[in-house]
Amino acid sequence: MNIERHIVHLLLKTLSISKDDYREKVVPIRPLSFDRVNEGKAPASDALLFTLPLEIIGQILETLPRSSLSSLALVCRDCRQLARSRQFASIELNYSDHSVALIKKLLAEANIRVGNQGVANGISQSLGVCIRRITVATDPDLVAARHDIHLDDPAHALAPALALNDRTTAKRMAKATKYFFDDYLPKLQLLWGSSIVLPNLESLDWRDNIALPRSFFERLPLTPIQHLRLSCVKVEEEFEVGLPQSSRGWPLRTLYLEVAPSFNRAFDVGLPRTSFMCASILRLCASTLESLTWRTLPLYEDHHSFATYKMESAPHFPRLRSLKLPNAGFSDYSMLDSLLEGDVREMEVDPGHDSLSSEFFEIRGTMRALTTLVWDGRIKPDQSLKFLQANSQLSKLSLQWEASATLLETQLLPLLTKSFQQLTSLSLKWESDTISGSALEAVGSLQSLQQLHLSAGCQHGWRHSWFIDHELMRSRLRNLTSLKRIAFSRDVYANGVELFDPQRYYEDRMHSDIWHWGNDDEWENWHRTRMLGQAQIYATEMPELEWLYFGQLRMEVSRGLGSHGDITCVSTLSDERDGCWTYLREMFGFKGT
Image 1 (cartoon, rainbow, N blue to C red):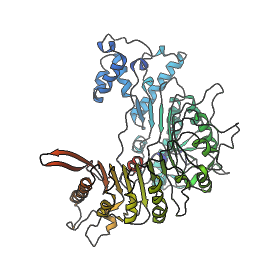
Image 2 (image 1 turned 90 degrees about the vertical axis):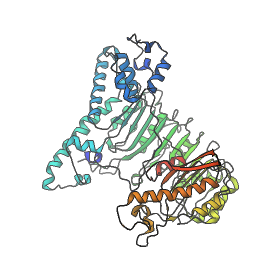
Image 3 (image 1 turned 30 degrees about the vertical axis):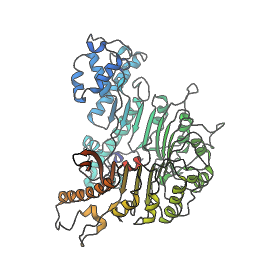
Image 4 (image 1 turned 45 degrees about the horizontal axis):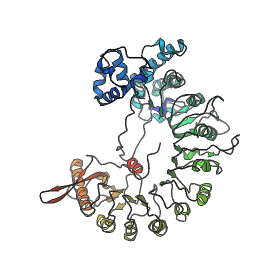
């Protein structure tokens, strides 16, 4: 049995210890113009709407409430196609009945087109031409409901021996596995296997953590896709992705690449390497790639290289501006040299990932276009900062992991205060449970800062060990006159209850006025009032401040003029607390692919 090609992987839900729900709103993809979704044919309707310029028709369509689109579609055939252009500009295939029906309809359209030598005359108006973005994210609840599988722990389905009363479930899971991998998945591949069915597809976001066959990857370069995201996918064999000799390349603009070898017992010689496939994909899209995020799983780390390729030289990435290499391993300098040779402006790397990375960044020198650096890795106390020293032009610097007070206070902060005159954004985390006043004084001397994120102590799980001193913070940071945003994460406060561990402040939700359980709402109100009081003092003492985050609450500052003078008011931006891990990571780093 190939345990990677099993329905159980689609039944497992992603677990999160802390709440991390807040995200910036995803900007909806704009619909294509009517002439494109109508494939160049003139509108058959004599409605006045279609006498307007295409740009005006598009603006009218985008201002309509989404709930009104179904009514618009009933007016006439042209209005239906116009409504479709927005309704189906972006679709999510989550294994619902709607998703299955949509796939069936799109493949039926493809059959009609192929029957007419690829010409659209055989179909009056196509649904497929309206689609610009596809997200594949199978919903575990929909899988369970469709196949009548209900497990307390889906991982038990992979046990070699099942209990007698689990035989029915085992049969259903086997049937579900066969349907998904032998029927549903091949149909998905057919969707973007040809430009006939989805001629305007620009973006594919694949989020299913399953093993994908070689044919899946080989079809992708033949599509018009410009934005590709492959999250936690597995490969079953070693191979390279190629193109016909007549092709000019794969015009990808953004790529999120997260692949791992498929763990299949059939491989007696070890796990298949992913290095050849990854290198071949990068080679194909090198000339057009603008943003790359490349993640590898630590348990299956490959050592990647362009030098092992049968090519005259390593590819060039002339348009690459945004690069994330949080944990990719390399066997030589060839890939790092190629990826960093151009005008990269935003970069997330771990310069101390291994000895090769340390050596490379030690001698890399200045990257003149670089403005944002996210150091994504644990920094050793003796870590060299030569690469950072050579790039004092940075405007954004973020340390994603906690570092020792010795390194931060004796090496990093003195370097920043001496050389980094253009630094507007800074994020630092201390390993220790406190941040000294002298360290805060050094941070407070960075006059160019416009946003600041500080944290200390335990950075994972429910335990919070940084008892923040807001009075000390304000006394050291109030001279940052340009500061607009300030964030303190993993901060904790005394609750005044001796019987409860203060490091479980957010878990126990107790304070000295509450001595019995069941008062979560009361505690939340008490905590919110407490945080708003502190935020009000910050806003009063720091006149440029617009946004704050601490106590797991996002807060904004409103300023105005009242009858008795200036008014400063602080309010929360949500009713619930949120760890905001992802949001802070992007605010003080960059969003990337």
